[in-house]
Image 1: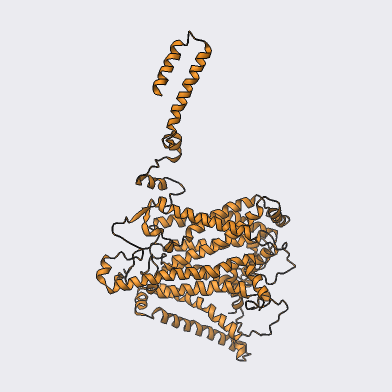
Image 2: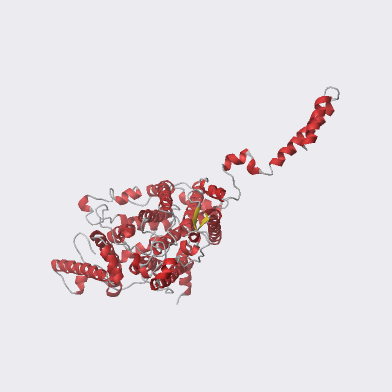
Amino acid sequence: MDWHQLWIILATPDNVPITLLLFVMPFYTWYGLKQSFANDRLIGQLEANPEMAKTHHRKTQPYRPEWVREVHVWPYLLRIEFLAALIVTIILFVWSITLNAPLEEPANSTLTMNPSKAPWYFLGLQEMLVYFDPWMAGVVLPSLIIVGLMVIPYIDENPLGNGYYTYKQRRFAIWTFIFGFIILWISMIIIGTMIRGPGWMWFWPGQTWDHNRLIFEVNRDLHEIFGIRNRWIAFALGGGATTAYLVGAAIGIHKLITLTPFARKIYQRMSLLQYTVMQVFLITMLALPVKMLLRLLFRVKYVWVTPWFNI
Amino acid sequence: MADTNGQSGNQSGNGAAGKSALTALVAGSKEVKTRALQEMETYKNPEKTDLWKSVLRVKHDETPRSRALGVLSNVFLHLHPAKINRDAVSYSYTWGMGGISFYIYIVLVFTGALLMFYYHPSKVIAFRDILYLEHDVPFGKLLRNMHRWAAHLMVITVELHMFRVFLTGSYKKPREFNWAVGVILLVLTLLLSFTGYLLPDDQLGFWAVTVGTNMARATPMLGHDGPFGSQFGMTPFNDVRFALLGGSIVDSNALLRAYIWHCVAIPIIASTFMVVHFWRIRKDGGISGPAPMMMESEIKPLRKV
């Protein structure tokens, strides 16, 4: 266990935000879900008791009929904003006084940094480069992430959970987002920062970054596992495997979308276009962990090799 | 006071001809003094003065109307409504991340503008400017540190803001479009941070930007290494990466381009989107909640188009 190496990684000034993320993300996930479960309990009570549902104010926040419903922005909101600005300013001053922004040697195109890493918020994309070719990991997938985020409101046909935390009423949406945001995006950033060392090789936390390390693992394409030499058969196999994934993923996702009676009710509300768009983005998103497993467990580089592109 | 003033005024007026100039002067100055005292009485209520009224336009007394006007008639505060739901101020619901992101953006604009005084976007001198900033400029190190850490913090707060908006379902009707604007703002935040990375012109920024822009060469159809790139006639000297860098390698043109994107273009674009984002929050009915919860049995049947 090389504690010094671990300390170097954690204490690199530019890595402090990731150390911060390690605490902040679990905290806010817990904070949000805690309120979701509290609200779910209240929804359960209201559903069990229709009389209560008629008169209840339907929030977990305290309520009394004689209280005014609205408060003045000045001072009740502005004082909070002022306090928040003050706290953020103090945090920034303390952070800026105690920790210096990194400055390496002058740019030198003849001396490659190893590992040469993107800024931390793009390390998820850089980590994707291990599993997909640059056109996919660097261009297509990021564009799909952006567009995929933007279409969320237009494909989510569930009218419940608008303006309050809930888990019970939005299981599929919340699992999908937590999977995409926490598991894929945040954890890939953490892998890229904490785990990846020289040569973008996998170093467990506390393992010394050995610049002379060589890994004798040969990455193979899928058809090579089966010893196929013929180009056309390989092409057909890759295409077949890709198609099998697309169909399999589509069926699996469809099963998830229609898992519960409530989910089926929402599914009935979706238009064909909404359903198709949702399937396309979810199948693409799922391709990442599938490819990660193929690569990390079976050392598969490409599933489908064509003269124009490789997947 | 008023009586004395009147008397002294009369006395000086009547006896001015017969008395010496000195007495007249003393009497005159007494009159000025009493007038001054009288005027100063009115300054005990500064809100009654014309100067005060001209700046603040409305009264600021302890009435609900004044409290509302204090927000509505102030250019910096008027994005707020005058009143909000009593539960909407709870931190547990909002996490305050949207407002904090905007505040950090202001901090970044401020520190960034100060940094621009000391920085030349030129390959010859950019790195030396950073050294100068760190070692000679008063508080230069603090300035640069704060700009850097605020940028990192903003990425975190923007992502947390998105997370909260998702968990509360706030992107649902009628706020769908504002979510899309927010996604664009997230991308712009990342781009702002990324374009700033190259500016110190050190190894860290240089290689990060090299890695980053190398992906652009693999753009399908628009990059010379990407699928169908060569079929579309792409070479290292006319593809999308060339457009980003102003050349085929990360060099002085890339530095200048990063500088202009970072300091001029993206801030203007981001500010514009922010204006729309904040405007739409108000137009879509203010903050989404905490809203009264809806039950499954209350779902209305979908209107068929």
